[in-house]
Image 1 (cartoon, rainbow over the protein chains, first blue to last red):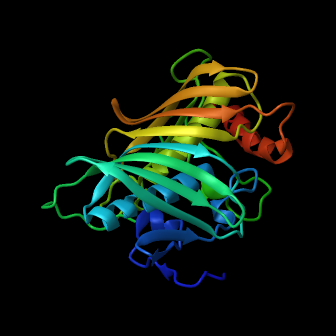
Image 2 (image 1 turned 45 degrees about the vertical axis):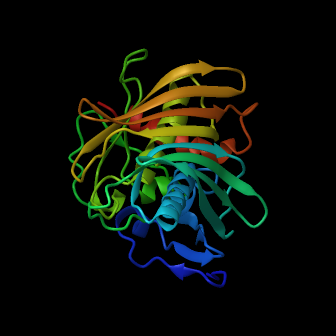
Length: 140
Length: 169
């Protein structure tokens, strides 16, 4: 598996993320980009990447954008996703989120997931900020 | 794989008949389906037991797992309610994460058919633990013309579901 340069594996992943990984991340010009290489274990009946896997991955990238932008932990409240094109097995897929606004409780995040040739998934989400005092292990 | 303590009438869906590698639906599983009488709340129910490999580091059911199952319930369940027997690619899904679930919970997913046009299927989906709702979702699937582009492979997927139904007592 060839990983594009600059990406590091998210080795702290456990549970769902670890079972469906490895997932990778890099920070470029202040933007956090996540990537993974889809294999047969990510496929649906049509042999393309399962919509649930795409949703999970974009959600994780959008949650990470909240952390890197506001230094606050957040959980997903609402996520709206548009499936724009198929994700192909063996094509490196990337996802990133952008914080577009927030108040003291809720953050609005735009997200996109794309392959080498086209957009795969577009997202808009609301994330609920956790209290600064609450200790929670990193989401991945 | 730990014991799923499957409630009565649920049957495991074999998504991988004839395939060398497990696909995503098996990889994240096990997933079960119960088929009730037509027109009842339980006409199509998908269920699963929450295990560690479906959870986030905090030990709660991962949102990605909820979204995956809701997606399946929208396409398979919604398709069943609408009497469609082909693979329905998802066009849009919107999820509201209402409550968490934890390891050991039995989660069920049901679809409500909102409308089926010639080319689109609109459904609402709820995931529940007991009486408590944990996820509300709405889904739009495309209904492919004819048998759909890849009906041959998708039929295997449907076939597994039918097998599960046939083997029901």
